[in-house]
Image (cartoon, rainbow, N blue to C red; front, top):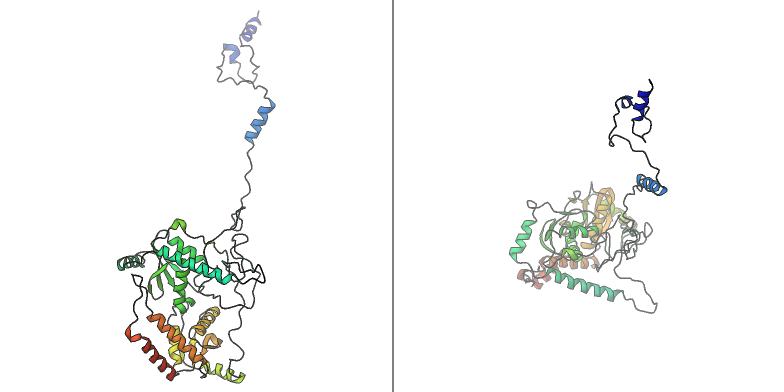
Length: 424
């Protein structure tokens, strides 16, 4: 009888529940049945499909390792094609097709990257016209193709520029590009007008009609060439020039969405090897005379001292004026990189013209030449061409050319030429 109540109490426990030895024995004493929310449900055996799905869900796919983006990886894309009708060069103002190198410093690696441009790299440029002859007996098709490209470029530029600007429109654009109105500016340094600057100009033309360009350093020796290359390669128009500051206008019908494709150069290509600038003996002189001239050139008075990254537009007229009275001219270039004053010497040789004597002790020494008349004729022609370029009429707002002033007529130029001949 003593064991009967305990047996009854244990019998009151709900059937089907596992024995809970770890729980309190109050359930046996009071007959409390826990709700389903507190009763852990027994685990049912899962099928293989459910196990694999759960395992796949828990197992996360590993992320691929980070790979930094590379500009050389084209991702299977074809090479870029550009419709610009001129040869791609690193610098358009500091390299001329007329000067032929005698060798290359490195293999012909394209600075655009492997497989990024559909133009071959010759070591100097990426030509727009394939100059390879397909037939030995056939004539060279390059001149005709180049003339066609020049004509197409001229027509496209005239279409984009549209009607000439009125004086009020020109003044408005010039005022908007001043330093106190905008900070947009493209700097043109010792490398001149480079290929990647084309992209900078078109990027600025997206949001403004004109962009300010500041020129300093070696290219400013020949500002006429800088202006010509800027207008020729970009298709724009220089509407204002004050010293080294230029304002380049994009044109009335310029569409930023239809801008030309300008592939970027990824690195600066190595400069080719050119002939020596300073010869052992100057043409027309003996070895002793050359040595005496170089010693004498180091003691002549200094014409001017060039500052680093300065504005050198007045250098050529100064040398020409000095040659009217002096045979040798010395220019002080202390503080300038050696490559800079060598480039300046080359420009003086071609623009004055003159003969390079020495680059010793960071000095540019130039000689005007013998009195045989050959160099004098070149000097007179270059001087008259300089006068023509200055008095040459600039296209006014109506597109017509202004008349040349009467005091600088052909007769006046002839008299000036006679005076120059007498002085020389």
